[in-house]
Length: 325
Image (cartoon, rainbow, N blue to C red):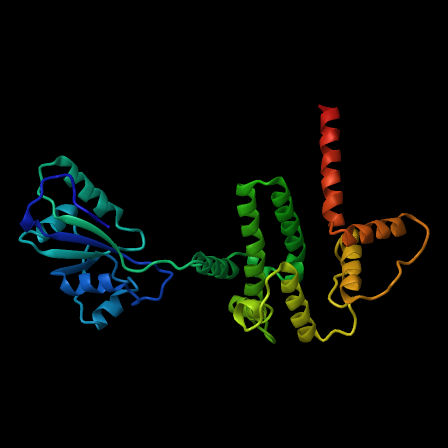
């Protein structure tokens, strides 16, 4: 992006390049226009002596002056058609940019061309690196977080999952974004705790690597030679590859018994139906067996009984509030 100021300009006033970099990209990985600007500049400046790019720039033979010039000094350094490149600090050098804006605004100073040149860009998912870094510091320095265990955090994972479901059902986009973050925090927190395990440590990279491998293996129609044109064919691929991976002796394996009762009943019935087993529902007295039958019927029709009951309960809550109000 090139922007010449609205103030007075002249051909011999030179050029100022503000070079920005992302701390989420490995130092030294700069764009080709950035390297060109650095190599052809008459002067390269950086106010931060610890800037992570400096060792790589110097290794490439670029002289960098560790200086924090004022706006007036930088404009003067460009007189005669010279080019000055400023390697921006992590804070973006607001004092310098504000000073340049004030000079340009007076209309009395012949300003150099001003150019903002992004030297490196964040890739999608780059902010996850920030989350990992923040979580690591909290784990080390926070008296509460440093003492947490997987078991101690388990209840929060359940709570956050329910809050996420509620945000989805409410259709609140802001709440959905926040609750997704809270669920993501649980994953990163547990992964950071796992790093401290003396016997079998693993990191968030191991967690991400495992799920990446699983997704690729279970999507041969995307990453392999197989084909799938319908959701049903995708499901067949998924179930087939999952069966090979797990080598389970019962369709009930992997069904968590701690989940809500309606969801548990529906999941068991889904496993039986998918496997093509003929297992009659157990008969018995009481509301439990009636609910089991209702859950199985709902699952057969493609309805999530847990979600259906939750929707009905929400309607009941609204009716209660209407009477109260």
